[in-house]
Image 1 (cartoon, rainbow, N blue to C red):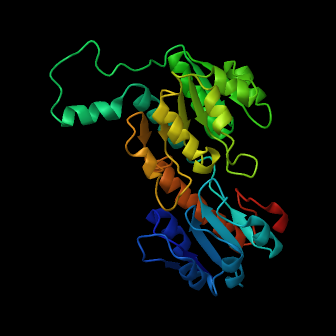
Image 2 (image 1 turned 90 degrees about the vertical axis):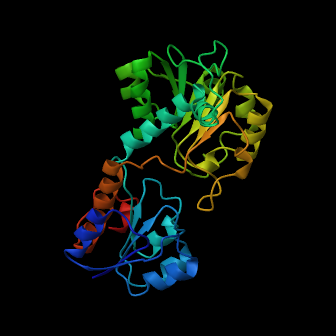
Length: 321
């Protein structure tokens, strides 16, 4: 059968597909335009796409032979799943394999922003460091502080587990109770307003849905303490970016660590660039060799399962089966 891959991914996934089917991989080292996506899916039985590819009704209809849309990501808000389901097309994703990598990026941001790592790096490179100074770039320790997890799924739970080395008090908000984490490490469920007002570090790990879009807005940011930090490795649209920028400018919170942006795939909000109290990374949550290769294999295996009439391990819309 014929498979279209919208952008080069780790070769291990491409090779697995090529062992059994014909595979066309886009030669573009950028996100494809809508017209290019439409042309790419024509007469294809499967498409392996990225989070940065918007797979809407026009593209789905252009792929009249499509049997599966395999997303190289955990989230799938870039795909019109309902439309695919109506046309009997399976939609799959790649959860689990990137849990540890994304949790580690959250902790990287927590430590970098709270201990002034990025401003410190710039300070040294500018040849301004003249020796130890008792008042230079004093930050906040993690030990014994309160960590608030917004979204206690796989990644949120891993972030919570990693906090044990810092002896942190963990509270969380989730659409349903995570009794396993409550029993395992004493995490306590609270409502969102209480979480943002009590946490020293607020770390976001929810999928992007109609319910979560803009869930951290003006009201929630105003409730945060001036010595607290906001960390977002989920989706940019979960946070009201304009309000966050103003909050950071005013110093109403101590800082933020941001890996995801509302304007993706068109870059980050430039209003962040001149702020010293925010650390920015280019959506590196899953950017480890193990995670990215694992995602490639999983995305390929999801396609192979559908094409061979089997149920894939990770299917978003199982009703199409």
